[in-house]
Image (tube, one colour):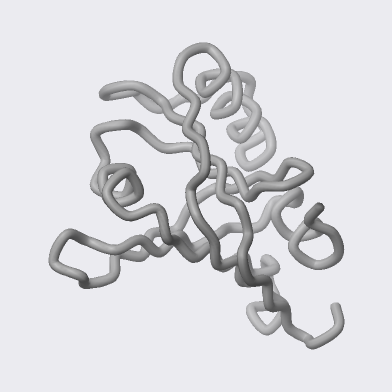
Amino acid sequence: MLDGKPRELASGKHFAVLSTLNQDGSIQSHPMWCDIDDDHILINTEVHRAKFKNMQRNPNVTVLVQETGNPWSWSEVRGKVVETVTGPEARDHIDKLAKKYMGVDGYPNPIQSERVLVKIRPERVMSFPPGS
């Protein structure tokens, strides 16, 4: 179970940076909305995006969540994508994130392909300040 600082930050209105590996081995990092369940960091994207294709090819990712207004308060989760969910559950999740981050009912941006909810199982968690 993810507790402490990772839970506090990922469940709050704080932005994450998702890092994935491109096919050539270079790193792609992208600011994201994030969420958390009992055992996973949750990211929601679309199936046509490079970050999703990267995660399909190589499930090793890093998610860094920084406290809004205090970049020295953060949690980094290194882990693996262990599940992806499409369909109504992924769509409902992006609507939930739009409410959390924007205060609106329903994700307002056009969806170009299909939403996908990505579940990341932590393998290593670090937080700063230490012990938080």
